[in-house]
Each structure stands twice: as C-alpha cells, then as structure tokens.
Length: 356
Image 1 (cartoon, rainbow, N blue to C red):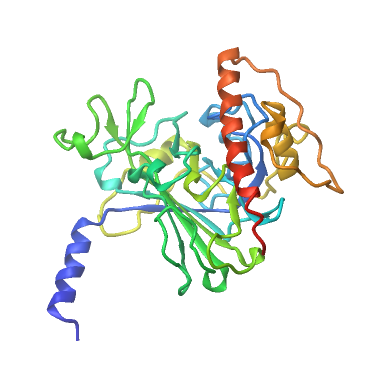
Image 2: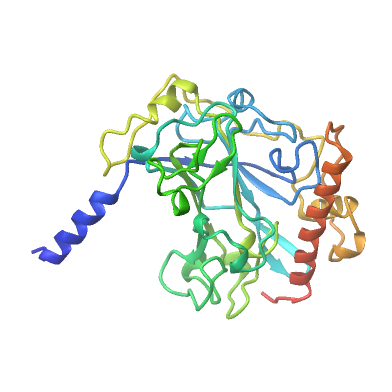
C-alpha cells in the first residue's frame, strides 16, 4: 500500500512536471568542423554529429538541414545536433568512443510562448572550461555512472573518479530557453528575470527547453581509480558543450507547442516521411574524422609547440584543405586563439601519461 508521504511526493512532482518530446538520434558522422562557432574553417576540435547529415563548415539555415539524410527517429525533425567527441586516452593515442545513445529532450513545452523559428541555432556549455567554476550552473552539466556504483567523489561536471559499472557513463546538458526574435540571441530563464511574466530577459520569448542526454560505454578505456582515462576533443570533462541548428519542418515545429498535459510525453506529427538512406559526410574531400589529423590542423592555425606529439598513423584520411572563407582576419585570429587554448588543455592532459 502506498504511504501518504509517497502520494504527497508524487502529486508534488506531477504538479511541477511539464510536457516533453524526445528525439532519439544515431550518429551521422564525426568531423573537425563547427559551422556555428568556426564557420568556414576546418580547424575545430572534433565533433560527433547527429540528425541531418547535411552539415558542412558553411551550413547556416534550416532549409539546408531539411535536405539531409536524417538519423533522428521523428521524420519531422531534421535538426542538426552535435557534441565534442569523447576519447579513451592511452598515452598519446586517442580512441574515439561513440555514444550508445543520444537523446534530445524538448522540456517545459507548457511554459513556452513560441516554437523554434527557422534558422534558429544555439550553443550551450563552455568549450573553454577547465574547472567546475568555469561551468555555467544553469547548463546543469553533469557526468555520472548510470549503472550501479563507481561514481567516486567529484565535481558534478567532472568525470567519475572510479570505474563505472559495465562502463556505462552518461552526460546531460541543458540549453537556454529564452530567445530574442529580432537578434536570435539566447538566455536562460529565471534568476534576476523572475519579475517578468515569462521569466525571460526583457524583449525575449520563452521557448521549449532543449536538453541533451548522452550515454556511452567506456569499457574500452579500461578501469581507473582517480583520473579517468577519458578526454573530450575540447579538453577536460568541464568543456562538454552542445550545438543545435533547428531543422524541424515548420508545421511540426508548431505542433510541438500543442502541449495538452503537463505530465506526459507530447507526440509531434507533421508532413515528414521516413527516409531510406545512409547518412554520410556531404563534404568528404575536406576536414577529417581522425584525431591526429585534427590536431595537426589545429596546430596549423597556431603554434605547433603547444600540441602533444602525435604518433605515426598507418592509414591517414584525406588531409584537411582550408576552405575559402568570407570571415575577417579578426575572426580568424579569434579562431586561432580558441584552437591554441584547446591545444594547451590537450597538452596538459597528455603529460599525465594516463595508463589504461
């Protein structure tokens, strides 16, 4: 028999819950590009892409995403989602670890005023973070073992300090839920903005809140007690971040707002149809999916001395070819500085000589 305290708790949770929709996506491909942060450049740290495969260094619009081969389980969502690639560390080698699952949750639909507009894009998290203090608490970034024990004592945004049972590791990241329709700028609701009816900064509208949930099997990295033999392409665990380019078909994006029950999953229909296709890199002649090649490309954007030495690779992929870019020299300098910061983090971790 349920106790009164259990019923009270259940009712309290139900009253605060909001309708949500969930997208399950498979990996489309892996590549050293980031069309939001480093448009036109092949010198980004490595990212793992999900959803529409129609993503290049120059992708800017929803219309582009909507022409791609889709790995999302809802055919009405051809959005592009990406995260920094996770690697197992063995001395100076990096072993890519592909996610077991990637889920994009659209939460708090009942609080949203408008849906995602076409061409909307957003980045959550801090790719330059080196400590918990560098992590925006509102992103709720957390790494944890999602099966059994093995957590250890750690910061919320740090890797576990001991081996996860069955190698099961999970990361979650929450996105901004306010945006300015005129500028497309984004922000988190709440805090000092609670005096506004929508809890958003003045001039902004409330949108559904996107949350990434990524699960990995890190068994290939071996066991550990202390520093985890894991590394993100962007650096330490704190640097985990997520990018999103809206690819929802317009009719479906409006249907996303039709939340009728605050306690249930919200189905989202539309004109989209299931595809019979295989996702592929639409720009295979440029950039790379190889870690060593990506490091060399980052070196080329800055100081070679900052990078860890890279062992010879038996089978090399096509070297990155710089694309013609319309960005200014000031933009390029910003990209170089960002690459240098990433290389400093990678170099520090490489010197730890973690054994697995």
